[in-house]
Image: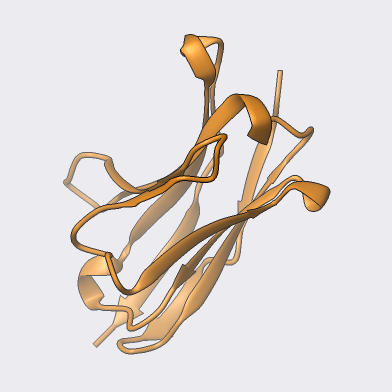
Length: 117
């Protein structure tokens, strides 16, 4: 079992930046794709960004160019740097670890991001 703990959320004005962190209880980056997802009130959870075990990144069109996913294996932590935030970025942001070949699927509890215009 792996615990994922998100942090770094908060309230920010439109145009501002936030860096979310996801700390894993042990290093699973070499055997998983790490992802950030978000869910706004009344909407379905959606993918924001992923980084594979090989370091390949992928972004939702809505955040492309404004967002960077990265990881620090020494700290067992994945980051989501979000810039030029918009009100539509307001959501509960979740971190997830998807094991290669479907070995496991872990989710964090989420961290709230609120962007005011």
